[in-house]
Image (cartoon, rainbow, N blue to C red):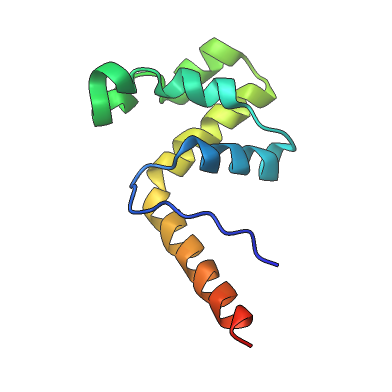
Length: 101
């Protein structure tokens, strides 16, 4: 069975996606990391990534920890969201075909 996550035309991964990536690569979720990173969205909107979205800021906040790795994965997922979206759509299509049999 495939695990399907859909971005619904949102170019930036939602926290659900970030938490899924955490669990996949780190074995647990770090929702407080993603909340902290995206807090400036309230005041800056889409430009929020000018704050709290660099490796240096992540390391300063979380040190050398799994939380920091979660933050680094968050940055990568944001930068690659279009590619991730295409991949999940591909998996969704495969699942649809399998279910049709």
